[in-house]
Length: 167
Image (cartoon, rainbow, N blue to C red; front, top):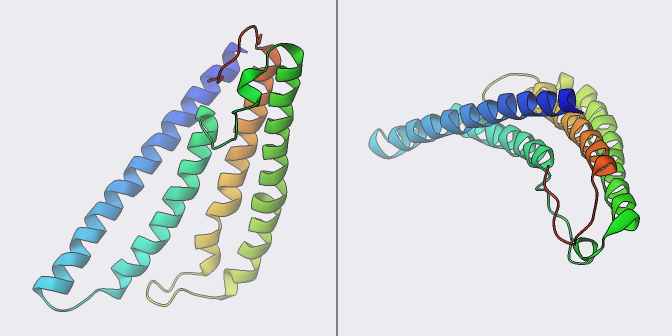
């Protein structure tokens, strides 16, 4: 259990730094775009495309990060009032459903769309679109890992009192 927490902490740290890097890059590219558009009257299509794709990557990675913190959106207004084994099994089922969604939609569907779009290239950057879409299955795998870790944590958690559970 302690090893799993260390792995989660390391994954969260790496993911956090990656998200911060993408945000800093977006800030720099966005500033460049503003300068070229308004001061030099020559808009940059490369920066527009780079901003769009880096925002997509950042939001997908941030969703995996939120799953790792167990801060994802959920309607806990009923579940948070429960205690005991019923609550434990409900939390595990929620994590298994999240795992299943990530596996089917994000990993399987993401791999399918990535393979399909490898022959298409982006308009300005001239890179295969599959490189852009590859973040969908990557973030799906991260969500699956975090959902499995969350389910294990919930299995070992005692629900003696009502309220939201954080890992």
